[in-house]
Structure formats: C-alpha cells, structure tokens
Length: 412
Image (cartoon, rainbow, N blue to C red; front, side, top):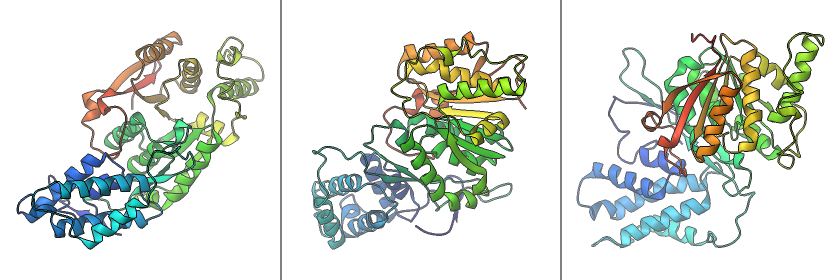
C-alpha cells in the first residue's frame, strides 16, 4: 500500500490502474469478482486500443501486479477469493479472440491459484481474512476536491464461522456510510453501539464524525476477541483521521443480562425507592427463550455500564432478526432513552429479511411508549457514497435506518 493521499477534482477517477484506484479498492474489499474485472477493464481503457489490446501482455502484467501484493499481504483477502479472481481473468483472456496467456507474471499467479484447495471440502470455521476499505474526505472550503485516502481500514472476518458477528452485514455498512455523510449525529457526542460485531461501523463513526467517545459492545467470546483485534489493527488508521485510539473501547453487553444489571443499578442509585425499571414484569423476568444462545453470558462490565449511562447516541445495526430477542433489545433502548429523554436518541439500521419480525420490532417500540422516525430508507441508502464495497447477500435498498426517541426529544 502507498503511504500518501492523492488529491483529485470532483468527478475525476483515480486514473487507470493506479494504486488506490477503483479496481484495487474492489479487490481489497473482496467485492464480487465480476465487479472487480469490470472495473479493471474500464480502467484499462485509459491506454486506449481494442478490447484485444486491453487484455494483451501489458494488461496481463498489470493485473498480476495488482493481485500479487495483496496475495502476499497477511492482511489481504482470502486465498480462495484470489484464486477465483485469477481463474476468471484467465478465462476472460483466453476467451477473447486474438489474445492468449502471454504474461509470465500472470502464469505464475495461475500456478499459485492451482495450489489453493477447491471449495468442495468442509469449510474451516477458523479461517480468517481481511477486508480493506477506504474513507475519503472532502478537500474542505476552497479545496480542489475530494482527498482519496490510500490508508485502508482493515477488518478481520471469519467467512465460514457460525457466529454471524464475525462477518460484515448490509445494515452495519450502510449505517457507517450514513453517519459519514451526516456527521452532525455523532460529532462531539458519546456513542455506544449494540451488537458491534467486527467493529466496522464504530470505527468509521470514530474516524469520520469526530465523536467524544465510542464504546462498542457484543457478547460472544469469539466476537469480542475479534473486535479487540480489529481495534488494535486500526489504531494508526483511526489516529490518521484525527481521532484518539484511546477513546474507542469495547466491552461486554448481552441484552437480557444487561437488563438485570441495569435494574440493580437503578435500585442502588435510588436507594431502593422511587421509579425503577419494571424488572419484575419486564423481559428479564420472562422465560428465557434464548437460554442456549446466552449460555456463555456473564455480568456486564462496569466500563460498559458507565458508557451506557454517559452515551448521547445509541447505535445498532443488523440486530433485528430473532423475534425472541426483540423485547430485550427494545427494553435496552427504552432504558437508554430514560436517562435523558429530551436529548438521547437511538439510531438503528436494519435489513428487512422477515416482514413479521420487522413489524414486531416496530410494534414493540410503540408498545413501550417510544417513537420512531425514518431517516433513510430504500433509495436513500442505495445512493449513499460507498465505503463498503463488499459482497453482500441483499441490496442496500433493503436497508432502513430509523431514529428512536421519546415524545420530549429535541433534536440539536
């Protein structure tokens, strides 16, 4: 990777096959192979000539030069992905009239790809790889245009692990892009995120929005270990964007056990008197429908409780998929808002997968006396400037982002 940033005018592309160009960005994000090849062919047009010329030896050498560095990088895409990319490009070359495989460098990559096991065997849940993304920024008043960053955000994922928190999902990516475009939501505010997963949303919020602090939470051991890893790997990246790495932290928060901890905190704070969360009739007292899922739960840590009480904005994405967990989730939001109903807000992004589950979530918000306002849906999400060029299951237009608040909330 280069160690500088390039300045360009609005509408300019980074140029044909340059480091940090669109093809490289798509490759490092493990975007769909067809998109990478399409971008490569488009950028190759900078050299002019026929389609055959653009797949000749010079283009083949350029493609090999593009793929080889990330293949050698321990923070690069998976071998399986790069194998598929190389094989598809070679088929494209050999399927084009008057071109053949003439590059020694590309032939070497093809030989390397042949050594990668085919995907027919049992997937390895412990196999990890890295996805890289780039956070560009405006040139500022009087500037010449956007500043294209060449320093990537690197996110470790485990594509075949059964813990869904070890992969990136649509709504978390879209929420990060939305926050980067609407920085006023997080600027100068303390943020707490539920279900942080790999940490990508919180890291982008920290780097792009200038918040007061960011506290990321999740609950499985595998997820939290990976979350801590991604925070460590990206300390320099966060700092390059003007945010102190020490102000982004992570902790344990499992919704059901947290409700019990919060009720205990409220009781202690009031000396056993006054209004308290309805723990006796609330979700913490309900039958544990998720006992197996929460078998590794432990009490929420003190740092997380402190961050919860002090946060101004609660973030969450891709957390609405288990109908049995929605009551707990909404109660956590309710208790968060109750700390300061006039100013606190929750921003939740969801990919609509099951209509019944989604509608139950909205009904539960209303049931507990809260309001929600849609701030981005469908085409709004589709139109956001892309940071995450990954290979997602659903379209961005399937994502909706809402603000949950009380009737007394006053946006500032």
